[in-house]
Image (cartoon, rainbow, N blue to C red; front, side):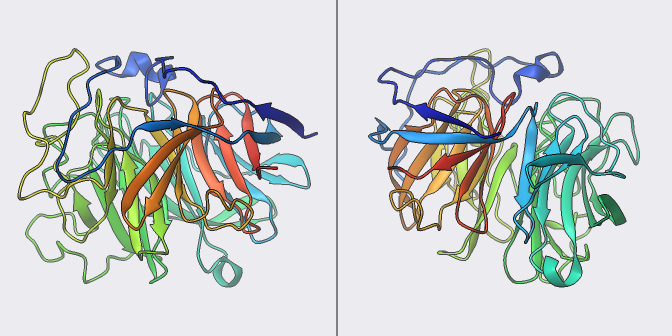
Length: 395
């Protein structure tokens, strides 16, 4: 049964309602986030003032009673695949939820668990579905982010293949990433966070963590990846110096992969991914430590790529979509970003690669985990503790 709800804009300042990336993982996180009220300036990135939405958006609950639906995607028949962070894969079809059998065993700790799901670009011909999740396989105690592909047959995963496993495992509960995207050129991109090892992983090409990776669809490494042949380097790495990317899209207008990633206290970023580029974490950042101290005085440098956009204070972004649908003319050509911390969806207006305006929609909806545009042009949002909701076009 679908539940229809009207959200009326709230004309009030933003307020802190919990920690950022996963308040359920407080025990696993070394430091607790508090809001940073200072706005830092940059000469290369324009940060428009936040606007209150002028539209009243309705939504309806389509898939109820989900806890942390971390990722979702659509099969060609219009049914949904949904990952529950705790480890379940759900196939939602004909208004019924079915748990898919033989799903991968996940390491559900802190921010780790069953993460993203993405239906392959040639699914109609080859049947491949791709997943990221935290796994205990491999060296060391704990777990780390893994990429798998599989096929769905008779409500069961078959032909399972692990395409990449980040190492080493760690018992830390932070920063697994992880989102998946395709570039239309036969490549798959996915992200792995720095795993809470800020000063070791992101800047070291011989180590996993704090990276965006590029593979061929079968898991092999493209020979034009930037670090192929470099001694000791992880050849699957496409870019590095990232903190914890939990949003990733292929922008068809620009032909680029974009990610957004969590900063610490302040400094969430949107980055345009470039081959071999270093995004600077933790040597440059617009954020500070959670205890209010500084870990770097630099926000930019000649060896680092500047963000397309950043947030101070942090909104704890999760979920990212480039809107192409004619059903939402006021959103078409722009991006939507979910906020875990402030529990709304943020609409960023674009002029090419410049963010020209920002506004909050679906205010106080809950902790937004993912946002997806369906094949028929509807926008769906995963909200923790509620389920999957559909944004209804403005009347």
